[in-house]
Image (cartoon, rainbow, N blue to C red; front, side):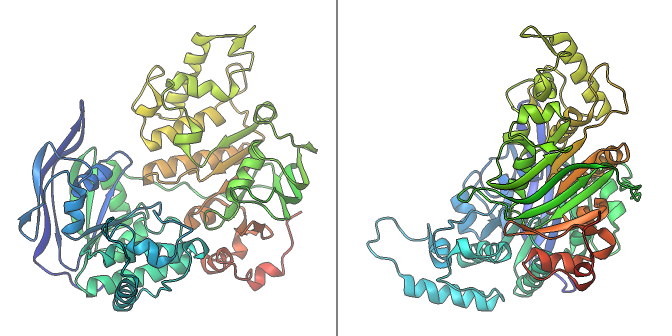
Amino acid sequence: MTEAPGTAPVLQLQGITKRFGSLVANDNISLSLNAGEVLALLGENGAGKSTLMSILFGHYRADTGHITLHGQPLPPGNPAAALAAGIGMVHQHFTLADNLSVLDNVILGTEPLWQPWSARARARARLLEVGQRFGLAVQPEARVGQLSVGERQRVEILKALYRGARILILDEPTAVLTPQESEALFDTLAQLVREGLSVIFISHKLAEVLRVSHRVAVLRAGRLVAEAPAAGTSQAQLAQWMVGHAVSAPERRPAGAPGPVACELREVSTPAGQRERLSQVNLQLRAGEIVAIAGVSGNGQLALAELLCGSRRAAQGEVLLKGQPLQASPAWLVTQGVARIPEDRHAVGVVGDLPVWENAVSERLRHPVFSRWGWVRRAVARQHAQRVIEAFDVRGAGPLSPARALSGGNMQKLILGRALLPLPGQAASQVPSLIVAHQPTWGLDIGAVAYVQQQLLAARDAGAAVLLISDDLDEVLALGDRIAVMHHGHLSPAHPATHWSRESIGLAMAGGPVSAPAQRMTETP
């Protein structure tokens, strides 16, 4: 951003403290936001960002401290008051009804329930006026379910502006956007601040933070540990403030010659009518190689991951695992050395109410090392869980603690350890034959991201075939030995990473043609 923000604070948080039992989520935090300013709010998972924004938006009530807006107290614990005061929030996961039009989504909840008619003509005119003013082109009658991800985000921003928002909270706004859509969002932010709006920008992408923000504030362990102008601050400095020590990105080492084919898909399609699907997909996954799949979330990545983890069947085509037909059985795949890192760690990756030790052995509980004659060998299982905790630096809970006590990053480390750590009695160098890693670093802080990525590279170097499915282009380009792009269930050929650029991947993610160099390449044999 080049525009200088106004000097008058429009928002002030003074001495905000929030406790959940013995946990201090926010510890005496004071922050201000100026008119026309983009303030980046950074921190590790569990640092207190979400709690602080929930207090600002009225979902939580602070134990101590207060908030003023334009010098007036903001009633605590009252979302309606926050909305009325001009605070709007665009969540990472959109809250739109796909079967309704853009106009219906925008005006939903803005008219009294007892009003016998809808002032649609006036609402449509206002929506167009707001869109034109802020450079957010929109078709009011378009059905949301037919819009691209970037267009849906535009509708979410318009919803807030239509309601009179003067302070906009953006939570991980580029997480599911193509590079071209991210550029359009940055242009929108520049227009917003020119109009005098103030923005709180929450992101783990430090390059974007430094590009779009005027000032950064960093939380660590519930405390405000740093505030600084974005200009003159480096990514390395931000990372150190966030985690308390220097963070090194995993060293990108070229893969050696790939080994034998671990898994192959030949003209595979999945049944229509399911959530996402594949259409005539061809792919080879080889030992000692990472194949990265880029694409906007919802274009078939879930179907591919579930197919290779045994929870979805192919309607046509052939899937081979080590030369034999793949069975649609998660238990069988575990016995064949397939490890999974699921997209949703909370709903699919772990069972939150079960203790850490049960989650650490859950996918291999039938193995003789953990069970005999139907009886679970609890002592062995708990010892293995302790090894996972120590080897993968799982912090915040012991083997007997419930898994829900873990932060997102530590929960992901537990899942990684369950997938990658050899069983008792196995060689330390033994790795899964195939690792299906679906959004393995989604929503993690920079320290946890570096750790997870390093573990995937180490598994590749030890001979595992790794399928990496990620929305993060930086991750795709950093880890992928070969890269393919998925769009509407179709998968492009997987070409060497050197034959892709961010721009060519972004175009393919949006349904455009694969770049000319890639078109002349053939699938690596």
